[in-house]
Length: 591
Image 1 (cartoon, rainbow, N blue to C red):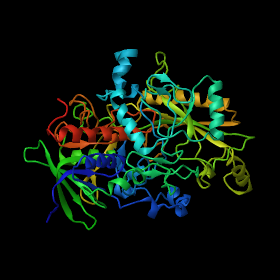
Image 2: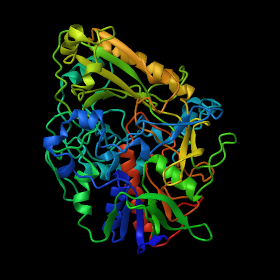
Image 3: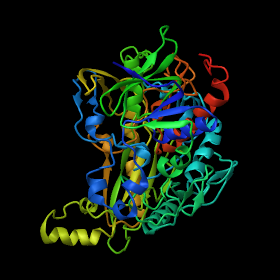
C-alpha cells in the first residue's frame, strides 16, 4: 500500500546547493516547501567539529562524508558498440553522503563562467566560421541565456556564500590584481581575497615573467568574519588546509549547512525528509503536468508526496534518471541526434605538470581548499585559435592545499624509491617542495556522449541504472596537449628543478580515473525544445510544473568549477517560480 502525505506547494528533490538555495527563495516568498534527500541529516557541529575535522584517514582516504558507490552505481562504456559495466568505486562521482550534498565536503572554488562559455556555438561561428563549430564530432549549442543575464544571480549567490576574491572587471573597467578576462561584474566580492602563500608567489612571478596575468582564485573559504544577507554569521579561515573531502569545524567554508540551513530550518513552511529515495515523478492523466513524486523512505515504505510544483535539484545522474524513468521528455538517440534527455554529457579536460623545487621551503601544511593562483590567458576563447586544432581552453592554476601527510607520500619525484630509507629521504625533502600546475579545461559535448537507462542493471529498488557512453572530443584532447605544454613552460619559469607533465585526455575517458568530479549535462537548457530538455528557466518543455536544476542543465563545460553557475541558475529559477509561474502557471518560455 502506497502511503500519501499532505500536498505541498513545492517538492524539492535533493538538498544540496541547488535545493537549499531554491528552498530559501521559495519559502521566503511564502510557499510551503517539502525537501526530500537521499542522505541522512548532516551538520557541522555534530559531524565535523574542530576536534574531528582534521582526520585525513577518515575523511580523505576513506571518504566517509561521500555517498557510497552502491547508492549511485552507474554503468559505463566509451562507445555504443561496447557493453557497459558497473562502476564499483567512487571514481568521478564524489557526491555528498548526506543533506548539503557535495557542498558540505567541496574544496570551495567559486567561479563565474565566462561570457564565451554561454555562447560557444554562436561565438565560435562568429570568430572562426561554421566549419569549426560543426566538425562532425562535437555537438555545440548555446545556453539560451547570456552572462549578462545571469550576472545579478551570480552576485546573489556570492553574497549568500560570502565568496572571497578580487574583481578583475568592475562595470567594464579592468582592475589590478583580479582576473582581467572575467565578465563585467557590478560590484566586488563580498570579502577580500585570501592570503598569498609561497607556492602562489612562485606561480605569480613565473607567470608575470612570461607576460601572463595571474590572480588569486575566488573561493568559498572566507577571508574575514562575515554576515550574509540571510543573517548567518561565518568565521575567518584559519588556513588549516582540511577542506576538500572535509567539513569545516571553523564555519569558514561556505556550505548549505553554514550559509542557508540556520535560516531555512527556522521557517514553519519548510520541512525535510531525509534518507528517502525518490524513484519517479508522477504525471497527471494527460501527461502534461506532474502531480508529485513517489519515494522509498528509510523503512522501505513507498510514499507519495503530492505537490503543485516539482523541482529536481539532485546530482546530474539522478536528475536524468528521474526524467527517463518518469517518461518526461524524449530520450536522446545518438544515431539520429534526436531527443533531448541524456544528451551532451561533458566532463572536464585535465592536464598539467607536477613540480619539485630544490632549495625552497613551501610549507604546504598551511592552506585552504580553493586557495591558489590562476591564469586565464589560455582559458575559453581568451586567445586566438585560428591556427590551432581545437576550440576552448583551460585555466592553469596552482593550489596551496596539498599538505595532507598520507596523500603526499605519492608526491615524490619519478624514480624515487618507494620504500625504506631512500623513500623517507625523498619524502622528508619533497613534502616541503612539491607543487602542481593543474589545467582545468573545458569539455565540448560530442554526438556520441550521452546517458540512457541500462537494459541490464537495476538498483535495489528495481529502477534501471544510468548507462553513460562517453569519450573525449578530439578538440578537447588537442587542447589538453596544448595547455600541458604551456604548464611545462610555466613550471620552468617558476624555477622548478624537476617537471613531470601529465595529460588525462591522452587516454580514453574512464569513470574510474579521478581527473575531476565535474560531470555535467544530460538535461540541458536552451531556447529550442528540439535540442534541450529544459528552457532557459530550467523548466521542462514537456511538463511545465517540473523544473530540473543543477549542472545537468549545462550544454557544455567550462574551464572552471561549476558550483557558482549552479547556484546562480538555481536562484534565477526560484525567483521565476515565485515571481511569475505561481501567478500564472504555464510555460515561462514559448517553445
